[in-house]
Image (cartoon, rainbow, N blue to C red; front, side):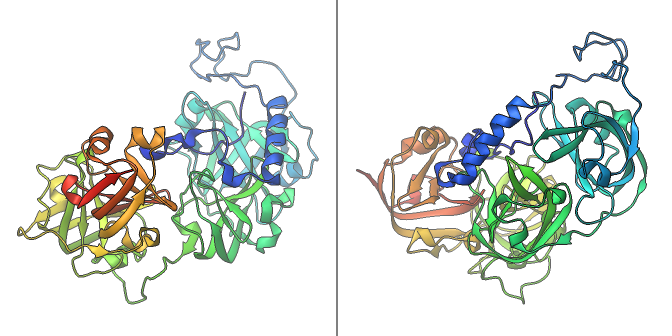
Length: 491
């Protein structure tokens, strides 16, 4: 049974419970009652699909009782050559074999895991309503397509026209031969809409499957565990299916683009990559430019994956949990946006001591919303002189921690933490009282158990010093060891 585009599970070990199949209580509303009804419809009318589509001739791994390589051995009507517009207008019988010619792939290819056995990409023919549709296929088919199919490919698709539920349509393919790449072009420009056109999950069904854009919207709810990392701007739902946007409540997004999809019954924009979400981090200054300083890099002066070289940085801490591959560094002259995580694709010979000056050469990237410079082993780090640990930024109220503190060392005079849930205990963190999205965590300890043993439990922490990491809209203060707080008194 194929379910329709489940949201991706969290890769963050402290947030692994996000694999749950429903959203948290903060998202319960009439909209989600509708969602549940939609799921019932989905399970009643779901597509029945083989669990394995091995196209090796003579291999009946697909379980259809034959050894044919195309996993579809029944003899049916000849395929109809048609257009996406005709499909979306209901002019073609559902469950008919169809061919759509010379359409443009508008998204990356998304492949689930082998157990889920599903994959997706979107195609469009022209711009505007009625011109786009999703193509569904299986894990093994997508694995073969992955090396040849990309966004902007011009393709002819042969498959079965289906209607999983309501006004939602798709083309389902069973073989890599069902996609013929005929050229390379460019996707149409997204259709600019008013937020009200697709707000509250409601939209013209003809817009589903097409590229759309809204402009100058305010984020009302950032991505979080409670919302399954969906976020909302001016009533429009946006999902992290392809790209996680590091936005928070009250951010202004200049534009949000992506393919409009019906996700769990709601019209939802799926941005495809970073450039589909254009926004500024609060507090960034226009004069922060270039690829040679952390404030500019952290404020998106460079694109994801762009090369960067930054000198005169100071090691703030090694990341003990992932010894040999990661550390945190800061610009000792910066008061905001001056810290960043460093990840090495190869084990480093050694992690420089805290306070050591370094020069880094690598690429800027984001991991779960946490900025980082990716280096290729020892060649990417030049070690300079030893020195004192960097000065911490004092933060009186931990609830005011924000993006500008990410990667930096902070000092909090006093804060209170609540009792650990089972999840918090197993993953080594405490939620800060009155601001659950701020935590005290164990990234710099050898293990969650070591951190839990060193802690004082629920209660008050005095003189806490740590490095701030930001994962999926949660900011965590990470002390290096027991000497990183003056006292930790449990209740």
